[in-house]
Amino acid sequence: MYQSPKLEFVVNQSIFMDPETRMADIVLPACTSLERNDIGEWANAGGYGYHINTTNNHRVMVYQKKCIEPLYESKSDYQIFSELAERLGVKEEYTEGNSEEDWIKIVFDNSDLPKYISFEDFKKKGYFVVPQQENYKPTPALRWFYEGRECDTPDRYNPKRGTEKAKELGTYSGKIEFVSQSLLEHFPDDEERPPMPRYIPSWEGHTSELAKKYPLQFISPHPRFSYHTHHDTHTPWLGDIPGHRISKDGYNWQTIRIHPLDADARGIKDGDIVKLYNDRGTALGIAQVTERMRPGVIHSYESSSKYDPLEPGKPGSVDKGGCINLLTPSRLMSQNVPGMAPNSCLVEISKWEV
Amino acid sequence: MARYGMVIDINKCNGCYNCFLACRDEYCGNDYPPYSLAQPYTGHFWMRIIERERGKYPKVKVAYTVLPCMHCDDALCVKASHDGAIYQRPDGIVLIDPEKSKGQKNLLSACPYRVIYWNEEKSIPQKCTFCAHLLDAGWKEPRCVEACPTGALIFGDLDDPNSEVSKLVASGKVEILHPEYEMKEKVTYIDLPKRFIAGSVVFGDKDECAENVSVTLTGEGEKKTVKTNNYGDFEFEGLPVDKEYSVRIEHPGYKPQEFEVKTKVDVYLGDIILT
Image: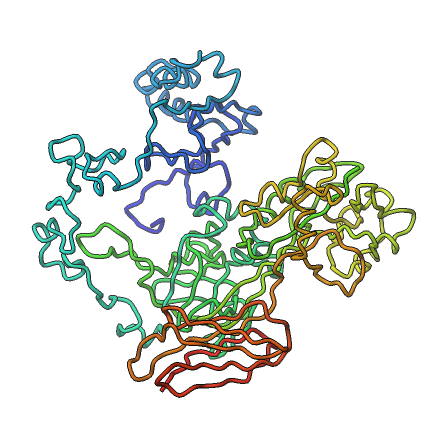
């Protein structure tokens, strides 16, 4: 992407000197959330979910009081944007005359918090545990449908919720569909996503022509020990968790899992540095030879945050950091399905002589 | 005075490494004199996890053996140390004095469990302290135990007959990892990985998983019979190492099959086709 002539200019705003920061024309150092005040809900999933308390037993609202002043030249995101707006002559329009602390108060005032606690007390205490409603009733998914009641889950994407058809499912027929009526109406001829689901050999899988050149199926699920790229590069401890990265000769290599049969056929031993490649890219990693893999399949977690090209600036450079996402296809499941298909991916692997 | 100990339930450990990370979070960059000095950012495993793969694809299990300091009552490291560099407190916790132990690299090999690590920068040996600084401040358990989401780590007072650790120790289910060291370890284990014998039975004529087939294991003066599940799978778990067994598979209308097996490693007999 950074090689594209259409890209005139890149700005990176980050709390770390990340591998991606190196691609930027201008770097704006942001401070961490420990160096600025904010208000938020602990462990909320952002815009993804409602009524979520994924890691707490209760919803907890937090006044995120800063621990220290921003270090060095770093500034809070809001301060960076405000100062940019000022130089562009639109500071009033951007800030509406509010400081960072004013916005925290505005968010507080727009929530239900003032019914329970004053802003001063909230700031002093630092958090507020949302009390359970007295008439609270759990609403397990789809129990309303099973019991023939109106939809009572906080599912805002059900178009029939709150209408006279609220007892039906959100499908066209209102029932559980074996043949999707909406797909039948809008995309009846989509060979890659037929209205009735069935097995379709992958456009890049063990039966496709490409398997002669790249015989190994590659799967790259979400990482177990980091949150996508978060923590990967900047937490050296993860290099001591063999399922995540393995340290060798002072470098934390991406773990690549391979079955003993596939490893033997290629002269690869446990702990060898290996090259994983296909026509889209090449990444290096460390082999973990394991019976946990099915023969013919290679496994490595997606979202390495350690892009470390051997030839910086050269398109298609071998990546030492283990960004296996370089190898996965960018095409969608079908032209009508905006979902990625990174596990439809064939690769070959060989020993890498450092 | 309490006498602290830990029980580690291997079957409950799923290898999340929260204990390992909590340990580093507590000790990396933090000095707690006179208990301990900061743990280096990498290379030390005061809470070590050993991953052992058992069996062969597709019948594979991973056993995570968690290895902190055993806080032995007859610790060889205490005996090997000079000037009281390693000592045992009245509550049973074995500590390395960061001042007195300076330069005593020989202590690393004094421990047969190899849970003492060398801090190159400070020239001192270091290890798990059971978070003694926290216990002395009123905590009930070390950081690793607090961080364990599955309850695989159980910590408490071995002298209190009502504590969970005491009850587990009294239940007779616990084992010492290496009893041959004879060091009176206060960290003990439940369900340390042994050996399994497993297989998958198929009805050859129908090309179907053979459910409800009798499988009999004979050996070591014992005889056990199990039935295959709906995938045709059977398993005998927790068998002793390096023993000889015979496995007999029989079902009405099919020819019985018998296998002689040695539990040198975990054994997966693969697909067994009944004809």
